Length: 378
Image (cartoon, rainbow, N blue to C red; front, top):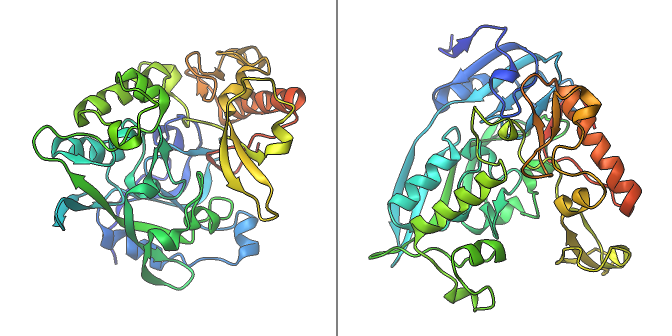
């Protein structure tokens, strides 16, 4: 019999997700080692696609709970929470360092660890909540950086084949908030469970400087000219981390138990990627960025979900009147749907649906949720 670290069956998602909503699990297992996690995974092979689509997977894998909304009815099966941690480093080449991280390790702790050691590459991703193992699923990104820029490979358990696999960054076929890991997940049922990850960072001796600062707002806040070539847009590592934390904090995107604006899943909607032709009707000045081409060769642009929400009549704090003040858009940033202290999952979804409907009515553009929804839908 395996020695899982079990917790009572009435442990709830409200206690273990950043939105602080959601009911209990049938069984809750916190794996404090990779071996414990593998024992649980061996007991839960991947169901058929039809079963997964119908929500009949008996296993739900949980990291930091930052990108998840679960119904108040909870989840009848087994929750496997990845609680194993660890970070190690190995020099590679002239100035490279490979940093290997256990899936359950807190992501921001990894970023802080790298900055303290003068390792550049993760600093712009400071302050993002959740476990490291979840970061490649959505190709987590912020301020012009994303995980795909530094990830070398990862080890995962393939539930379909019942074996451990190594997936390279190329295998993961990253896109905007997208990856093979996400595309092989159906209704929250994951095929690949990440065990550890390897990042290639750059050692910066002396006064360690950051990777190129790509994002205009961050560059300006650091006193850098956004028009300079990327190679010249660098700042001291620690300064970049501090500035990113300050910017995120000003938007309610750094967890704070005392601040209800941070009781959320973070950005609730992804930035829409649409044909350039369909964005022509947007007002002048609406943010849009090149996003490659579609399969049919049509030019694509990425729009700002926050701008669309703001300009459709959904200001900061929108939606509180719909749910008697229990939930609303953040009072700091309209891209987050927040729990004002006593919200239910349905309260958050009610606010999100209203914002989505306003954007569709005003601009004819559909917004899509970023968090995984279990037992509920938008």
